Amino acid sequence: MLSKEQNELVTRTGPGTMMGDLFRCYWLPVLLSQELAENDGPPVRVKILSERLVAFRDTKGRIGLIDEFCAHRGPSMWFGRNEDCGLRCPYHGWKYDVNGQCVDVPSEPAESGYAKKIKLKSYPTVEKGGVIWAYLGPPERRPPEPAFEFCTVPREQSFISKRSQECNWLQAMEGGIDSSHVSWLHSGNVNNDPLFKGAGGNKYNFGDLAPVFEVAEAPGGLFIGARRKAEDDQYYWRITPWVMPCFTGVPPRGDHPMHGHFWVPVDDENCWAWSYDYHPVRPLTKEERAAMEAGNGVHCEYVPGTFRPLANKDNDYLMDRQAQREKREYSGIKGIAIQDSSLQESMGPIIDRTKENLVGCDNGIIMARHRLMRAAKALAEKGTIPPGVNDEHHKVRACAMLLKRDVAFKEGARDALKAEVGRAQTTV
Image 1 (cartoon, helix red, strand yellow):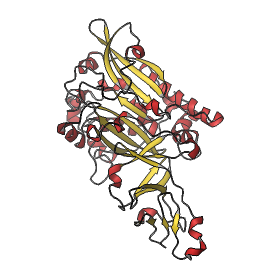
Image 2 (spheres, helix red, strand yellow):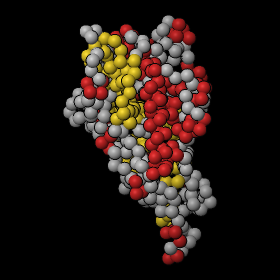
Image 3 (cartoon, helix red, strand yellow):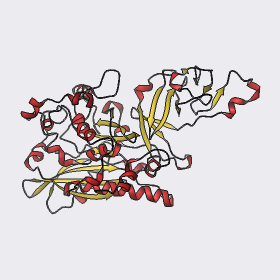
Image 4 (cartoon, one colour):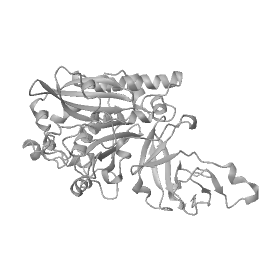
């Protein structure tokens, strides 16, 4: 468990907090490219790390991410007119470019140069893999662009979605590095979901319900290995990479696409759960893409016109007690994404970790917490750049494999854990 002070450190990410400063060392996903699909299209509200911003794509296709509020008298720029390479406030006509620079104050003479004195806060963005990424940290520490494999493969090989989640980012992320719950919470999906079924490794999830966890440090975070008993003096290993602060890959199943998540804080009590699928060596099939769009696998169905899950806490996640009794859905809730979010949200906005009773299968979670705290303190006290900023740290994969029982998983899976162009995933 954590002390109250430690829990505050790892969960609070607003401006001026230690964990907020840590998050501001990284490129973070903020929007799907499709949310800013056209030049001079409608602006989009963005809230991240407790900062309220607005994003827009200008006449030349450049993306701006600026303070939500006009510098004149403070109305939201979400109401702005996106035109002629800038976003114009409809209240009094003040206009800002993609860098937040005011370029027109209609009430003041142009020759006065007044507009040049006004600038909104703005953050740099890059667009990769169908995602708009933002960097909210100091300009002098701007890191290399994100190089995660899902955003570097051809677009026909990947699919990405996001959903809102009503809890702190950390309790959501901790679910992503916990492989032991798969044999329970997701047991109805492993053999039935079109994006998982038929994989040879599935039998091991149900043949051994008490996996043993081993955790190894990686340059960018951790490798979390969950081993289950297999035949012929072997273990079945599912190895999850965690790259600081909030990226995880999920070990693959057969030739199904690989997938994983980011959990990005909106504020201290809400986060965005980003979910990606990709195949490293082939395009996604029509059937796979259709299944993802329908909310299967790690994705979900939405309330129309929003990114809020259709099954949410207001409707008890569409709980089906009959499906629970019949073990078609172990928790009675449909879909892997919502099975996770329902339990994580049920903990409350920020779980009180002083009340936990952790066991051996929580070793990955324990080590991740301590690595986050060490990195945040080193950044605050010494200015030490944290793990996961280097783009080489992004080039990792999850894997699933059989290894002889006397082989250490990090050694046996060394090559399998590396993302390599043109090489298929290692899976069972």
